[in-house]
Image 1 (cartoon, chains in turn green, brown):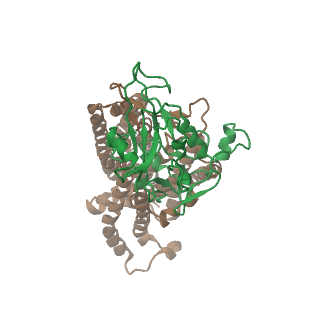
Image 2: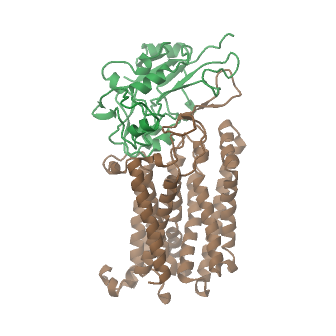
Length: 224
Length: 409
Protein backbone atom coordinates (compact mmCIF):
# COMPACT_ATOMS: atom_id res chain seq x y z
CA UNK A 1 0.00 0.00 0.00
CA UNK A 2 1.36 3.36 -0.98
CA UNK A 3 -1.14 6.08 -0.35
CA UNK A 4 -1.29 8.94 -2.78
CA UNK A 5 -3.48 11.88 -3.65
CA UNK A 6 -4.62 13.17 -7.01
CA UNK A 7 -5.85 16.74 -7.39
CA UNK A 8 -7.73 17.54 -10.57
CA UNK A 9 -6.96 21.16 -11.43
CA UNK A 10 -9.73 21.14 -14.03
CA UNK A 11 -12.25 20.64 -11.26
CA UNK A 12 -10.68 22.99 -8.69
CA UNK A 13 -12.71 26.20 -8.51
CA UNK A 14 -10.28 27.98 -6.17
CA UNK A 15 -12.90 28.30 -3.40
CA UNK A 16 -10.37 27.51 -0.65
CA UNK A 17 -12.86 25.25 1.13
CA UNK A 18 -10.09 22.67 1.52
CA UNK A 19 -7.85 25.31 3.15
CA UNK A 20 -10.53 26.16 5.68
CA UNK A 21 -11.57 22.55 6.32
CA UNK A 22 -7.90 21.66 6.86
CA UNK A 23 -7.31 24.62 9.14
CA UNK A 24 -10.39 23.96 11.27
CA UNK A 25 -10.23 20.17 11.50
CA UNK A 26 -6.57 20.25 12.41
CA UNK A 27 -6.89 23.11 14.91
CA UNK A 28 -4.16 25.13 13.24
CA UNK A 29 -3.08 28.19 15.23
CA UNK A 30 -3.60 31.69 13.76
CA UNK A 31 -1.39 32.48 10.76
CA UNK A 32 -0.65 28.78 10.33
CA UNK A 33 -1.92 27.14 7.15
CA UNK A 34 -0.99 23.58 6.16
CA UNK A 35 -2.86 23.91 2.91
CA UNK A 36 -2.72 26.87 0.53
CA UNK A 37 -4.70 27.58 -2.63
CA UNK A 38 -3.45 30.33 -4.92
CA UNK A 39 -3.86 31.52 -8.48
CA UNK A 40 -0.53 30.86 -10.22
CA UNK A 41 0.85 33.87 -12.02
CA UNK A 42 -1.39 36.30 -10.16
CA UNK A 43 -0.75 38.36 -7.05
CA UNK A 44 -4.46 38.27 -6.24
CA UNK A 45 -6.27 35.02 -5.72
CA UNK A 46 -9.16 34.38 -8.13
CA UNK A 47 -7.88 37.08 -10.46
CA UNK A 48 -6.64 35.72 -13.78
CA UNK A 49 -3.06 36.83 -14.59
CA UNK A 50 -4.09 37.08 -18.25
CA UNK A 51 -7.34 36.76 -20.15
CA UNK A 52 -8.36 33.12 -20.42
CA UNK A 53 -5.51 31.91 -18.25
CA UNK A 54 -7.02 30.90 -14.97
CA UNK A 55 -6.44 27.89 -12.80
CA UNK A 56 -5.83 27.36 -9.11
CA UNK A 57 -3.14 25.44 -7.31
CA UNK A 58 -3.70 23.81 -3.92
CA UNK A 59 -0.42 22.93 -2.20
CA UNK A 60 0.13 21.07 1.07
CA UNK A 61 2.66 18.46 2.15
CA UNK A 62 3.53 16.40 -0.90
CA UNK A 63 4.35 13.34 1.25
CA UNK A 64 7.51 12.78 -0.78
CA UNK A 65 9.09 9.36 -1.10
CA UNK A 66 12.55 10.96 -1.07
CA UNK A 67 11.62 13.51 1.60
CA UNK A 68 14.42 15.99 2.40
CA UNK A 69 12.62 16.98 5.63
CA UNK A 70 12.85 13.41 6.89
CA UNK A 71 16.52 13.10 5.93
CA UNK A 72 17.62 16.29 7.70
CA UNK A 73 15.64 15.75 10.93
CA UNK A 74 18.37 15.12 13.53
CA UNK A 75 16.11 13.10 15.85
CA UNK A 76 13.92 11.15 13.45
CA UNK A 77 10.81 13.08 14.54
CA UNK A 78 9.73 13.28 10.89
CA UNK A 79 9.17 9.78 9.58
CA UNK A 80 7.41 7.72 6.96
CA UNK A 81 4.36 5.85 8.23
CA UNK A 82 3.73 2.35 6.88
CA UNK A 83 1.22 3.68 4.32
CA UNK A 84 3.65 6.22 2.88
CA UNK A 85 2.45 9.36 4.71
CA UNK A 86 5.17 11.63 6.12
CA UNK A 87 4.32 12.41 9.75
CA UNK A 88 5.85 14.42 12.62
CA UNK A 89 6.12 13.00 16.12
CA UNK A 90 5.05 15.96 18.30
CA UNK A 91 6.72 14.36 21.30
CA UNK A 92 10.12 14.08 19.67
CA UNK A 93 10.50 17.24 17.55
CA UNK A 94 13.18 19.52 19.04
CA UNK A 95 12.17 22.54 16.94
CA UNK A 96 15.45 23.12 15.09
CA UNK A 97 13.49 24.02 11.92
CA UNK A 98 16.05 22.32 9.68
CA UNK A 99 13.14 20.57 7.90
CA UNK A 100 11.54 23.94 7.10
CA UNK A 101 14.59 25.03 5.12
CA UNK A 102 14.92 21.64 3.47
CA UNK A 103 11.31 21.41 2.24
CA UNK A 104 11.05 22.91 -1.25
CA UNK A 105 7.25 23.24 -1.00
CA UNK A 106 7.17 25.57 2.03
CA UNK A 107 4.56 23.48 3.81
CA UNK A 108 6.15 23.21 7.23
CA UNK A 109 4.94 25.52 9.96
CA UNK A 110 6.54 26.35 13.29
CA UNK A 111 4.87 27.19 16.60
CA UNK A 112 6.60 30.47 17.35
CA UNK A 113 4.61 30.83 20.57
CA UNK A 114 2.02 29.04 22.65
CA UNK A 115 -1.14 28.65 20.48
CA UNK A 116 -3.32 30.01 23.30
CA UNK A 117 -1.28 33.23 23.26
CA UNK A 118 -1.45 33.34 19.48
CA UNK A 119 -5.25 33.18 19.72
CA UNK A 120 -5.22 36.19 22.06
CA UNK A 121 -2.76 38.11 19.91
CA UNK A 122 -4.95 37.58 16.86
CA UNK A 123 -8.02 38.55 18.90
CA UNK A 124 -9.89 35.28 18.48
CA UNK A 125 -13.04 35.08 20.59
CA UNK A 126 -12.46 33.67 24.04
CA UNK A 127 -13.57 30.08 24.48
CA UNK A 128 -13.50 29.62 20.73
CA UNK A 129 -12.06 26.17 20.15
CA UNK A 130 -12.03 24.35 16.87
CA UNK A 131 -10.68 21.15 15.45
CA UNK A 132 -10.49 17.47 16.28
CA UNK A 133 -10.60 17.57 20.07
CA UNK A 134 -8.33 14.71 21.16
CA UNK A 135 -4.66 13.85 20.92
CA UNK A 136 -4.08 11.21 18.29
CA UNK A 137 -1.41 8.51 18.10
CA UNK A 138 -0.52 6.72 14.89
CA UNK A 139 1.62 3.59 15.34
CA UNK A 140 2.14 4.71 18.93
CA UNK A 141 3.54 8.11 17.99
CA UNK A 142 1.82 11.36 18.83
CA UNK A 143 1.00 12.95 15.46
CA UNK A 144 -1.88 15.26 16.39
CA UNK A 145 -2.73 17.50 19.36
CA UNK A 146 -5.54 20.06 19.41
CA UNK A 147 -3.28 22.46 21.33
CA UNK A 148 0.27 22.29 20.06
CA UNK A 149 3.23 22.84 22.37
CA UNK A 150 5.23 25.94 21.45
CA UNK A 151 8.54 25.31 19.70
CA UNK A 152 7.65 22.39 17.44
CA UNK A 153 7.05 22.04 13.70
CA UNK A 154 3.76 20.84 12.19
CA UNK A 155 2.30 20.12 8.77
CA UNK A 156 -0.31 18.14 6.84
CA UNK A 157 -0.73 14.55 8.07
CA UNK A 158 -3.26 13.53 5.41
CA UNK A 159 -5.55 13.76 8.47
CA UNK A 160 -4.04 10.79 10.29
CA UNK A 161 -6.72 11.10 13.01
CA UNK A 162 -9.49 10.50 10.44
CA UNK A 163 -7.74 7.99 8.21
CA UNK A 164 -7.13 5.74 11.21
CA UNK A 165 -10.93 5.59 11.54
CA UNK A 166 -11.36 4.76 7.88
CA UNK A 167 -12.42 8.29 6.94
CA UNK A 168 -11.03 10.50 4.23
CA UNK A 169 -8.89 13.61 4.89
CA UNK A 170 -10.85 16.80 5.64
CA UNK A 171 -9.73 18.49 2.39
CA UNK A 172 -11.11 15.60 0.33
CA UNK A 173 -14.43 15.58 2.16
CA UNK A 174 -14.72 19.36 2.13
CA UNK A 175 -14.07 19.88 -1.60
CA UNK A 176 -17.33 21.00 -3.28
CA UNK A 177 -15.90 20.39 -6.76
CA UNK A 178 -14.79 16.82 -5.90
CA UNK A 179 -11.33 17.63 -7.20
CA UNK A 180 -9.42 15.53 -4.68
CA UNK A 181 -8.92 11.76 -4.61
CA UNK A 182 -7.02 9.46 -2.28
CA UNK A 183 -6.03 5.94 -3.19
CA UNK A 184 -3.38 3.25 -3.49
CA UNK A 185 -0.61 4.13 -5.93
CA UNK A 186 0.73 0.56 -5.79
CA UNK A 187 -2.52 -0.77 -7.25
CA UNK A 188 -2.49 -0.13 -11.02
CA UNK A 189 -6.28 -0.42 -11.14
CA UNK A 190 -7.08 2.02 -8.34
CA UNK A 191 -8.95 5.21 -9.22
CA UNK A 192 -5.92 7.37 -8.60
CA UNK A 193 -3.66 5.23 -10.78
CA UNK A 194 -6.17 5.19 -13.62
CA UNK A 195 -6.70 8.95 -13.46
CA UNK A 196 -2.97 9.63 -13.48
CA UNK A 197 -2.38 7.51 -16.58
CA UNK A 198 -5.33 8.90 -18.48
CA UNK A 199 -4.78 12.58 -17.75
CA UNK A 200 -1.01 13.31 -17.93
CA UNK A 201 -0.57 13.70 -14.19
CA UNK A 202 2.40 15.77 -13.05
CA UNK A 203 4.13 16.53 -9.75
CA UNK A 204 5.44 19.81 -8.37
CA UNK A 205 9.18 20.55 -8.70
CA UNK A 206 10.08 17.17 -10.24
CA UNK A 207 13.61 18.54 -10.78
CA UNK A 208 14.22 18.47 -7.02
CA UNK A 209 13.99 14.66 -7.07
CA UNK A 210 11.71 14.51 -4.02
CA UNK A 211 9.25 12.05 -5.62
CA UNK A 212 5.97 13.47 -4.29
CA UNK A 213 2.94 11.19 -3.78
CA UNK A 214 0.59 14.10 -4.49
CA UNK A 215 -0.19 14.30 -8.21
CA UNK A 216 -1.94 16.99 -10.20
CA UNK A 217 -4.07 16.61 -13.31
CA UNK A 218 -3.54 19.59 -15.63
CA UNK A 219 -6.41 22.00 -16.34
CA UNK A 220 -7.73 22.60 -19.85
CA UNK A 221 -7.36 26.03 -21.40
CA UNK A 222 -10.40 28.17 -20.66
CA UNK A 223 -12.64 29.40 -23.43
CA UNK A 224 -13.40 33.08 -23.03
CA UNK B 1 45.48 40.03 37.84
CA UNK B 2 45.76 43.46 36.22
CA UNK B 3 43.01 46.07 36.43
CA UNK B 4 42.44 45.85 32.67
CA UNK B 5 41.99 42.10 32.97
CA UNK B 6 39.52 42.52 35.83
CA UNK B 7 37.48 45.03 33.86
CA UNK B 8 37.54 42.77 30.81
CA UNK B 9 36.35 39.77 32.84
CA UNK B 10 33.63 41.72 34.60
CA UNK B 11 32.34 43.33 31.42
CA UNK B 12 32.32 40.15 29.31
CA UNK B 13 30.94 38.07 32.19
CA UNK B 14 28.10 40.57 32.69
CA UNK B 15 27.20 40.54 28.98
CA UNK B 16 27.10 36.74 29.05
CA UNK B 17 24.76 36.78 32.06
CA UNK B 18 22.46 39.24 30.27
CA UNK B 19 22.37 36.84 27.30
CA UNK B 20 21.41 33.95 29.59
CA UNK B 21 18.62 36.06 31.04
CA UNK B 22 17.44 36.93 27.51
CA UNK B 23 17.47 33.23 26.61
CA UNK B 24 15.40 32.33 29.67
CA UNK B 25 12.91 35.03 28.67
CA UNK B 26 12.83 33.57 25.15
CA UNK B 27 12.33 30.04 26.55
CA UNK B 28 9.29 31.34 28.37
CA UNK B 29 7.72 33.30 25.51
CA UNK B 30 8.89 31.23 22.54
CA UNK B 31 10.79 32.15 19.40
CA UNK B 32 8.12 34.77 18.74
CA UNK B 33 10.67 37.11 20.39
CA UNK B 34 12.93 36.69 17.37
CA UNK B 35 12.12 38.28 14.03
CA UNK B 36 12.12 34.98 12.17
CA UNK B 37 8.92 33.53 10.66
CA UNK B 38 8.04 30.44 8.63
CA UNK B 39 9.37 31.60 5.27
CA UNK B 40 12.56 32.92 6.93
CA UNK B 41 13.13 30.17 9.45
CA UNK B 42 16.82 30.62 10.34
CA UNK B 43 18.41 33.96 11.20
CA UNK B 44 21.10 35.50 13.35
CA UNK B 45 21.59 32.43 15.56
CA UNK B 46 22.48 30.07 12.74
CA UNK B 47 24.60 32.78 11.07
CA UNK B 48 26.30 32.96 14.48
CA UNK B 49 26.95 29.22 14.36
CA UNK B 50 28.79 29.61 11.05
CA UNK B 51 30.66 32.66 12.40
CA UNK B 52 31.93 30.98 15.59
CA UNK B 53 32.83 27.76 13.78
CA UNK B 54 35.02 29.87 11.46
CA UNK B 55 36.65 31.70 14.36
CA UNK B 56 37.63 28.35 15.86
CA UNK B 57 40.06 27.61 13.04
CA UNK B 58 43.02 29.32 14.75
CA UNK B 59 44.00 26.12 16.49
CA UNK B 60 44.03 24.29 13.18
CA UNK B 61 46.26 26.84 11.49
CA UNK B 62 48.84 26.96 14.28
CA UNK B 63 48.94 23.23 14.97
CA UNK B 64 49.38 22.29 11.35
CA UNK B 65 51.88 25.10 10.68
CA UNK B 66 54.05 24.10 13.64
CA UNK B 67 53.88 20.33 13.56
CA UNK B 68 53.09 19.47 9.96
CA UNK B 69 54.89 22.28 8.09
CA UNK B 70 57.63 22.98 10.67
CA UNK B 71 57.01 26.73 11.17
CA UNK B 72 58.74 26.83 14.58
CA UNK B 73 58.48 30.58 15.13
CA UNK B 74 54.72 30.19 15.70
CA UNK B 75 55.29 27.82 18.62
CA UNK B 76 54.84 30.44 21.38
CA UNK B 77 51.34 31.12 19.99
CA UNK B 78 50.23 27.47 19.88
CA UNK B 79 48.46 27.59 23.25
CA UNK B 80 46.59 30.77 22.34
CA UNK B 81 45.50 29.03 19.13
CA UNK B 82 44.14 26.01 20.99
CA UNK B 83 42.46 28.25 23.57
CA UNK B 84 40.68 30.52 21.05
CA UNK B 85 39.65 27.37 19.16
CA UNK B 86 38.08 25.88 22.28
CA UNK B 87 36.35 29.14 23.22
CA UNK B 88 34.87 29.60 19.75
CA UNK B 89 33.82 26.02 19.13
CA UNK B 90 31.97 25.94 22.45
CA UNK B 91 30.43 29.33 21.58
CA UNK B 92 29.28 27.78 18.28
CA UNK B 93 27.47 25.03 20.19
CA UNK B 94 26.00 27.54 22.65
CA UNK B 95 24.53 29.79 19.94
CA UNK B 96 22.56 26.85 18.53
CA UNK B 97 20.68 26.39 21.82
CA UNK B 98 18.51 29.54 21.59
CA UNK B 99 17.59 28.56 18.03
CA UNK B 100 16.07 25.29 19.24
CA UNK B 101 12.33 25.44 19.91
CA UNK B 102 12.39 22.66 22.52
CA UNK B 103 15.95 22.54 23.92
CA UNK B 104 14.77 20.38 26.82
CA UNK B 105 14.34 17.58 24.27
CA UNK B 106 17.91 17.68 22.97
CA UNK B 107 18.52 14.29 24.64
CA UNK B 108 16.63 12.87 21.64
CA UNK B 109 19.82 13.50 19.67
CA UNK B 110 21.46 10.82 21.82
CA UNK B 111 18.46 8.48 22.05
CA UNK B 112 17.27 8.68 18.45
CA UNK B 113 20.01 10.15 16.25
CA UNK B 114 19.16 10.16 12.54
CA UNK B 115 22.48 9.27 10.96
CA UNK B 116 21.42 10.81 7.64
CA UNK B 117 21.16 14.28 9.17
CA UNK B 118 24.16 16.61 8.66
CA UNK B 119 23.11 18.31 11.92
CA UNK B 120 23.89 15.09 13.81
CA UNK B 121 27.30 14.92 12.10
CA UNK B 122 27.93 18.55 13.00
CA UNK B 123 27.12 18.03 16.68
CA UNK B 124 29.55 15.09 16.69
CA UNK B 125 32.46 16.93 15.03
CA UNK B 126 31.93 20.10 17.06
CA UNK B 127 32.09 18.08 20.28
CA UNK B 128 35.10 16.10 19.10
CA UNK B 129 36.88 19.31 18.14
CA UNK B 130 36.08 20.92 21.50
CA UNK B 131 37.49 17.89 23.34
CA UNK B 132 40.49 17.74 21.00
CA UNK B 133 41.26 21.46 21.50
CA UNK B 134 41.02 21.14 25.28
CA UNK B 135 43.22 18.03 25.31
CA UNK B 136 45.72 19.63 23.00
CA UNK B 137 45.88 22.74 25.18
CA UNK B 138 46.43 20.52 28.20
CA UNK B 139 49.30 18.65 26.54
CA UNK B 140 50.96 21.95 25.61
CA UNK B 141 50.55 23.33 29.15
CA UNK B 142 51.71 20.16 30.90
CA UNK B 143 55.38 21.15 31.46
CA UNK B 144 54.24 24.38 33.14
CA UNK B 145 51.60 22.87 35.39
CA UNK B 146 53.69 23.31 38.54
CA UNK B 147 53.27 25.05 41.90
CA UNK B 148 49.61 25.74 42.70
CA UNK B 149 48.61 24.03 39.42
CA UNK B 150 50.63 20.86 40.09
CA UNK B 151 47.50 18.94 41.07
CA UNK B 152 46.28 19.28 37.50
CA UNK B 153 49.34 17.58 36.01
CA UNK B 154 49.45 13.90 35.16
CA UNK B 155 52.60 12.21 36.46
CA UNK B 156 55.16 11.61 33.72
CA UNK B 157 58.97 11.31 33.91
CA UNK B 158 59.84 14.13 31.54
CA UNK B 159 56.85 16.47 31.05
CA UNK B 160 58.69 18.56 28.43
CA UNK B 161 59.51 15.58 26.20
CA UNK B 162 56.10 14.02 26.84
CA UNK B 163 54.35 17.24 25.84
CA UNK B 164 56.44 17.61 22.69
CA UNK B 165 55.94 13.99 21.64
CA UNK B 166 52.20 13.93 22.18
CA UNK B 167 51.60 17.35 20.65
CA UNK B 168 53.25 16.04 17.50
CA UNK B 169 51.23 12.81 17.52
CA UNK B 170 48.03 14.65 18.21
CA UNK B 171 48.44 17.30 15.52
CA UNK B 172 47.14 15.23 12.54
CA UNK B 173 44.10 14.03 14.51
CA UNK B 174 43.23 17.56 15.64
CA UNK B 175 43.67 18.74 12.05
CA UNK B 176 41.13 16.16 10.85
CA UNK B 177 38.47 17.32 13.34
CA UNK B 178 39.32 20.94 12.57
CA UNK B 179 38.72 20.54 8.83
CA UNK B 180 35.68 18.46 9.77
CA UNK B 181 33.85 21.25 11.63
CA UNK B 182 34.03 23.61 8.64
CA UNK B 183 33.14 21.01 6.05
CA UNK B 184 30.26 19.51 8.00
CA UNK B 185 28.87 22.92 9.03
CA UNK B 186 28.86 23.92 5.36
CA UNK B 187 27.05 20.67 4.48
CA UNK B 188 24.14 21.67 6.72
CA UNK B 189 23.45 24.28 4.03
CA UNK B 190 24.95 22.85 0.87
CA UNK B 191 23.06 19.53 1.05
CA UNK B 192 19.76 21.40 0.71
CA UNK B 193 18.64 20.92 -2.87
CA UNK B 194 15.61 23.09 -2.11
CA UNK B 195 17.78 26.23 -1.83
CA UNK B 196 19.67 27.16 -4.98
CA UNK B 197 21.76 29.70 -3.06
CA UNK B 198 23.20 26.98 -0.80
CA UNK B 199 23.17 23.92 -3.05
CA UNK B 200 26.77 24.27 -4.19
CA UNK B 201 29.85 22.08 -3.74
CA UNK B 202 31.97 25.24 -3.38
CA UNK B 203 30.52 25.90 0.08
CA UNK B 204 32.76 23.41 1.92
CA UNK B 205 36.11 24.68 0.56
CA UNK B 206 34.85 28.24 1.00
CA UNK B 207 34.00 27.60 4.66
CA UNK B 208 37.52 26.21 5.17
CA UNK B 209 39.15 29.25 3.54
CA UNK B 210 37.04 31.84 5.44
CA UNK B 211 37.79 29.95 8.64
CA UNK B 212 41.54 29.96 8.05
CA UNK B 213 41.40 33.72 7.43
CA UNK B 214 39.22 34.71 10.38
CA UNK B 215 40.45 32.04 12.84
CA UNK B 216 44.05 33.16 12.29
CA UNK B 217 42.99 36.79 12.74
CA UNK B 218 41.44 35.89 16.09
CA UNK B 219 44.76 34.36 17.22
CA UNK B 220 46.65 37.41 15.93
CA UNK B 221 44.39 39.73 17.94
CA UNK B 222 44.79 37.60 21.07
CA UNK B 223 48.58 37.47 20.64
CA UNK B 224 48.91 41.22 20.03
CA UNK B 225 46.83 41.98 23.12
CA UNK B 226 48.83 39.53 25.23
CA UNK B 227 52.36 40.14 23.99
CA UNK B 228 52.11 43.60 22.43
CA UNK B 229 53.55 44.58 19.09
CA UNK B 230 57.26 44.66 19.99
CA UNK B 231 60.09 43.03 18.04
CA UNK B 232 60.00 39.60 19.64
CA UNK B 233 56.91 38.34 17.84
CA UNK B 234 57.01 40.37 14.64
CA UNK B 235 58.19 37.45 12.59
CA UNK B 236 55.32 35.27 13.85
CA UNK B 237 52.81 38.06 13.17
CA UNK B 238 54.08 38.49 9.62
CA UNK B 239 53.60 34.78 8.99
CA UNK B 240 50.06 34.96 10.36
CA UNK B 241 49.36 38.04 8.22
CA UNK B 242 50.48 36.20 5.10
CA UNK B 243 48.27 33.18 5.93
CA UNK B 244 45.30 35.51 6.55
CA UNK B 245 45.77 37.35 3.24
CA UNK B 246 46.14 34.17 1.19
CA UNK B 247 43.14 32.52 2.80
CA UNK B 248 41.04 35.68 2.23
CA UNK B 249 41.98 35.74 -1.45
CA UNK B 250 41.02 32.07 -1.85
CA UNK B 251 37.71 32.78 -0.10
CA UNK B 252 36.91 35.78 -2.33
CA UNK B 253 37.81 33.72 -5.39
CA UNK B 254 35.56 30.81 -4.36
CA UNK B 255 32.66 33.15 -3.57
CA UNK B 256 33.02 35.11 -6.81
CA UNK B 257 33.29 31.86 -8.74
CA UNK B 258 30.00 30.64 -7.29
CA UNK B 259 28.20 33.93 -7.97
CA UNK B 260 29.63 34.15 -11.50
CA UNK B 261 28.32 30.70 -12.41
CA UNK B 262 24.86 31.49 -11.02
CA UNK B 263 24.80 34.80 -12.89
CA UNK B 264 26.06 33.30 -16.15
CA UNK B 265 23.43 30.58 -16.32
CA UNK B 266 20.79 33.23 -15.79
CA UNK B 267 17.67 31.16 -15.11
CA UNK B 268 14.85 32.67 -13.10
CA UNK B 269 16.13 31.26 -9.78
CA UNK B 270 19.60 32.67 -10.46
CA UNK B 271 18.11 36.09 -11.31
CA UNK B 272 16.28 36.03 -8.01
CA UNK B 273 19.51 35.13 -6.17
CA UNK B 274 21.34 37.99 -7.90
CA UNK B 275 18.47 40.40 -7.09
CA UNK B 276 18.90 39.63 -3.41
CA UNK B 277 22.68 39.15 -3.18
CA UNK B 278 23.66 42.05 -5.45
CA UNK B 279 20.48 44.13 -5.29
CA UNK B 280 18.75 44.24 -1.89
CA UNK B 281 22.02 43.44 -0.13
CA UNK B 282 24.38 45.08 -2.62
CA UNK B 283 26.05 47.34 -0.07
CA UNK B 284 26.45 44.50 2.40
CA UNK B 285 27.97 42.44 -0.41
CA UNK B 286 30.48 45.18 -1.21
CA UNK B 287 31.40 45.25 2.48
CA UNK B 288 31.74 41.45 2.79
CA UNK B 289 34.22 41.54 -0.10
CA UNK B 290 36.06 44.82 0.52
CA UNK B 291 36.46 44.68 4.31
CA UNK B 292 38.22 41.29 4.54
CA UNK B 293 40.38 42.09 1.48
CA UNK B 294 41.44 45.47 2.83
CA UNK B 295 41.84 44.20 6.40
CA UNK B 296 43.98 41.23 5.38
CA UNK B 297 46.05 43.33 2.99
CA UNK B 298 46.79 45.78 5.83
CA UNK B 299 47.72 42.88 8.13
CA UNK B 300 50.63 42.04 5.81
CA UNK B 301 52.24 45.46 6.31
CA UNK B 302 54.81 45.88 9.05
CA UNK B 303 53.68 49.44 10.00
CA UNK B 304 50.31 47.93 10.85
CA UNK B 305 51.70 44.92 12.71
CA UNK B 306 53.90 47.22 14.83
CA UNK B 307 51.04 49.38 16.08
CA UNK B 308 48.46 47.79 18.37
CA UNK B 309 45.57 50.15 17.48
CA UNK B 310 46.17 49.74 13.74
CA UNK B 311 46.49 45.98 14.06
CA UNK B 312 43.24 45.82 16.03
CA UNK B 313 41.46 48.09 13.55
CA UNK B 314 42.57 46.06 10.52
CA UNK B 315 41.65 42.79 12.23
CA UNK B 316 38.31 44.25 13.26
CA UNK B 317 37.64 45.19 9.64
CA UNK B 318 38.28 41.62 8.52
CA UNK B 319 36.23 40.05 11.30
CA UNK B 320 33.32 42.45 10.66
CA UNK B 321 33.46 41.61 6.95
CA UNK B 322 33.34 37.89 7.72
CA UNK B 323 30.46 38.46 10.13
CA UNK B 324 28.46 40.20 7.40
CA UNK B 325 29.39 37.34 5.06
CA UNK B 326 27.87 34.91 7.56
CA UNK B 327 24.73 37.03 7.91
CA UNK B 328 24.34 36.94 4.13
CA UNK B 329 24.06 33.14 4.16
CA UNK B 330 20.33 33.58 4.81
CA UNK B 331 18.66 36.34 2.71
CA UNK B 332 19.32 34.95 -0.78
CA UNK B 333 18.19 31.52 0.43
CA UNK B 334 14.95 32.56 2.14
CA UNK B 335 13.88 35.41 -0.12
CA UNK B 336 13.93 32.99 -3.01
CA UNK B 337 10.90 30.73 -2.51
CA UNK B 338 11.75 27.25 -3.83
CA UNK B 339 8.13 26.44 -4.77
CA UNK B 340 7.94 28.33 -8.05
CA UNK B 341 6.37 27.46 -11.34
CA UNK B 342 5.78 28.73 -14.82
CA UNK B 343 1.95 28.81 -14.92
CA UNK B 344 0.22 26.99 -17.79
CA UNK B 345 -0.32 29.37 -20.67
CA UNK B 346 2.16 31.97 -19.38
CA UNK B 347 5.56 30.67 -20.51
CA UNK B 348 7.30 33.98 -19.70
CA UNK B 349 6.15 34.27 -16.15
CA UNK B 350 7.80 32.93 -13.03
CA UNK B 351 5.57 32.66 -10.01
CA UNK B 352 6.33 31.82 -6.36
CA UNK B 353 3.85 30.29 -3.94
CA UNK B 354 3.64 32.41 -0.75
CA UNK B 355 4.21 30.74 2.65
CA UNK B 356 2.06 31.24 5.76
CA UNK B 357 4.14 33.23 8.25
CA UNK B 358 2.96 31.26 11.31
CA UNK B 359 2.95 34.36 13.51
CA UNK B 360 1.16 37.64 13.89
CA UNK B 361 3.03 40.32 11.94
CA UNK B 362 1.25 43.68 12.22
CA UNK B 363 0.61 45.29 8.86
CA UNK B 364 1.73 42.26 6.92
CA UNK B 365 -0.15 39.61 5.01
CA UNK B 366 -0.25 36.11 6.52
CA UNK B 367 1.15 34.76 3.24
CA UNK B 368 4.62 35.99 2.38
CA UNK B 369 7.08 35.43 -0.43
CA UNK B 370 9.39 38.29 0.59
CA UNK B 371 10.46 39.26 4.07
CA UNK B 372 12.95 41.87 5.20
CA UNK B 373 14.50 40.07 8.15
CA UNK B 374 16.44 42.05 10.71
CA UNK B 375 17.37 40.49 14.07
CA UNK B 376 15.28 41.42 17.11
CA UNK B 377 16.79 42.89 20.27
CA UNK B 378 16.67 39.49 21.99
CA UNK B 379 18.53 37.85 19.10
CA UNK B 380 21.20 40.57 19.14
CA UNK B 381 21.62 40.47 22.94
CA UNK B 382 22.03 36.69 22.89
CA UNK B 383 24.57 36.77 20.05
CA UNK B 384 26.61 39.53 21.71
CA UNK B 385 26.46 37.64 25.01
CA UNK B 386 27.85 34.48 23.41
CA UNK B 387 30.66 36.53 21.83
CA UNK B 388 31.33 37.89 25.33
CA UNK B 389 31.39 34.32 26.64
CA UNK B 390 34.24 33.47 24.24
CA UNK B 391 36.17 36.57 25.36
CA UNK B 392 35.49 35.79 29.03
CA UNK B 393 36.75 32.24 28.67
CA UNK B 394 39.96 33.32 26.93
CA UNK B 395 40.66 36.07 29.50
CA UNK B 396 39.97 33.75 32.42
CA UNK B 397 42.26 31.04 31.03
CA UNK B 398 45.03 33.56 30.34
CA UNK B 399 44.70 34.86 33.91
CA UNK B 400 44.64 31.47 35.62
CA UNK B 401 46.54 29.03 33.40
CA UNK B 402 50.05 29.03 31.92
CA UNK B 403 48.84 30.08 28.49
CA UNK B 404 51.27 32.89 27.75
CA UNK B 405 54.88 32.30 26.85
CA UNK B 406 57.13 32.36 29.89
CA UNK B 407 59.42 35.35 29.28
CA UNK B 408 56.47 37.71 29.38
CA UNK B 409 54.74 36.48 32.54
